[in-house]
Image (cartoon, rainbow, N blue to C red):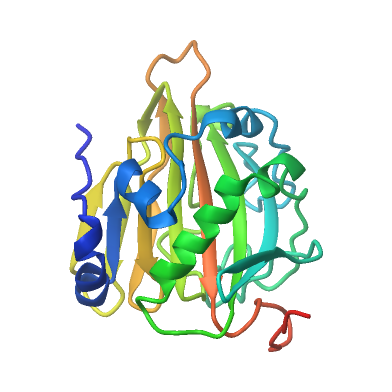
Length: 254
């Protein structure tokens, strides 16, 4: 049985993030945080149906589709940066770390949408609750996890429980379709304390202080085996010290 997440009221977000290191905002609270008419996902939804396959899965699965893009947020201004590879050290991703992964870029229509700009500014404000930064370096990942692979199972986090090597992780639920499973698990990185729940409301968002908690999402299966099943998310990460790469560098916006 699915357990709904405990929601944090927007005025309580600072204390929740400082105390627990994570929070879940409802769609309406996310809209307020972003200061834009970001209710539901509107015209963005069809973009998830057009995601190309992830070419880098090392577990042999064919259950993940994905696009990726990078940006900066500085003094409230959002700027896209030239398309670049996604890279993580093996310390944070033992399955897919240590090499450059190139994905197709985010759709032009998404990046140009004023609601997209508002979303990124709002998430940068959430990151400021952790610590201030002159500039936030962000990566955005559009994910579709389906059950068309071997065994009819899709794995949102094939690397298991993990951290991402950033400051803030935001997992925005786009939608669930004919899915069971997909339980979100958040644990204190220093001990056994944790929470388990299932994100179900479109445009609700899980915010994580990546230095303090680890997270994972359990595999999904179809509720009705004869019908397609998928779980769509948008994952945005923000980092204060530059984009991650094979060499430790700080990228400074022009």
